[in-house]
Length: 145
Image (cartoon, rainbow, N blue to C red; front, side, top):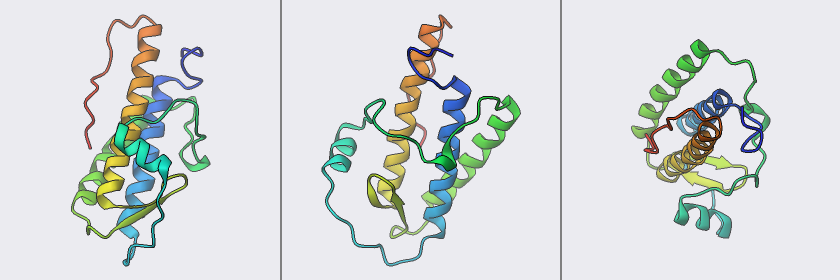
């Protein structure tokens, strides 16, 4: 862990990303048309245009908070579940939707974009943690959404 970068370990960031993807994907798959009314949000527009979430600005919802003692086996299982759900979401209806607590209603394609932005945000933090710890390697910055 590198507290000067994040209060979470690398495993906790991975777990958080997986929990978020799983929750978002399940909500999107279970959504029913029609797409709810959406309002313009400057915050959403800026984040989607820049592809970046500022650090330290938001608190993760309780259901996606990681635990400190997550095992490697648990992370692998979460990664597998996330991958399977992402494949299902890619095949979901275009009018599927997810209501984000800050960004409002997102359709399927916007939701997939959000997942990529969110995971990229955490990848950059993970990279900084590893660099601070002197791990000598950093994860790929390619998003897989």
